[in-house]
Image (cartoon, rainbow, N blue to C red):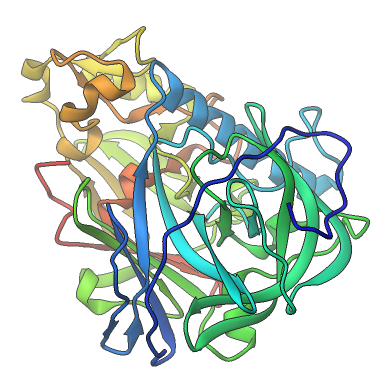
Amino acid sequence: MWAGARAPSKGLPASSIPALAFDQLPSYGKDVTAHIGAQAASTAMVLDNLVTLPIAKHFNFTGSGKILQHDQARTRSLRDRAITRATGTPPPSSEVGSVPITNQIIAYTAFVKIGAPPTGYTLVIDTGSANTWVGAEQPFVTTSSTRDTGNDVAMSYGHGKAMSGVEVTDTVTLSPGLTVSGQSIGVSAVSSGFASFDGVLGLGPVGLSVGSLTPQSGAQVATVTQNLYTQGSITSEVVSMFFEPSTEGIIGELTFGGTDPTKFTGQISYAGITDIYPSSEYFGVNQYVTYTRTKTLLSYNPGIFDAGTTLVLLATDVFAKYIDMVGAEYDEDTQLFRITPAQYENLQSMFFTINALVCEFTANAQIWPRHLNSMIGGSPDYVYLIIADIGWPFGLGMDIINGMLFLERFYTVLDTTNNRVGIAYTQYTDNTTN
């Protein structure tokens, strides 16, 4: 807890864990890139005027049923946050603010430094929230650059996860020579459910931060991306994501300010942010989704791209159609649906049409990695589907969540400047291993 923090009235105590470290290097160009690996790289690199930073991939296996429970709790909090922004009144659950990271099966974390002199923190990359905060594990260290804003900050994530503390401004260092001055960040005095991580790097639309502060509840909290843009470090308010469906080695890239053409094939297809609420509050686009090329599941209906969701979630009645087409059965132990290896041989591709690009989501992309079945409480004798039930019926304005296991197969561009989302194929789109 920061020495100057005002203790909130309620919450759970936080614990402490050391963060990773990164080496010194100069900053080049207008795009800021971070490589993601199972282990953080020991040295940052400069490639094609892109600054690369060490980032780690984490697996957090929590046993039977926890994947779907986490994802459904998260989607409820996403929906509730949109309701709060539109009406100015939190829904009965009072789940407003950032997004759930606790029990997230796959998490991608950026190592950033805060303060002068700086202290390093491991932050979960989150495209479904706008607030950046620290202090969940490693306590925040106040320095000469830390300034109190006079605001408290509180965020609930669903499923009992929360943080509360104070809002400060400080210097955020993405790499030596590349800093964000006066970045507003939350300092957690108490938090629950964020084991192994120091906090969240919020990369979502800035409007999602409304309602997180007290007394300035109507204020927006500028994101790191927004401040990089306004301070002239990048030329566009763009975040691009590349992931490899793997558990080992360098498995991806996060780019601020542009795209990395070495990480995708063909052209990027852009779709404007949907005007259908509540998907319109996020990086949401209308999608046409089929099983095989002829069996329609969604007909240009809204959904969102979300790095904090593990699975691909469909509206309940749409999901039922998919399960009927596949012939899957419910598995009590994992709370996912399963098929036999023989059925897997007949599993067909799904197709997601986003603007002009038809994205093939192969049979292999639709299944949980079989060598990790035991980690989710599953049996080696079955194949578990990563397509699941969102928890509400079709027609409520958020009919699909394209979670991390979707994002691992495509290059994704979150373009705030032009109010659009881009998608392209990568060398891993058609991988037969995951």
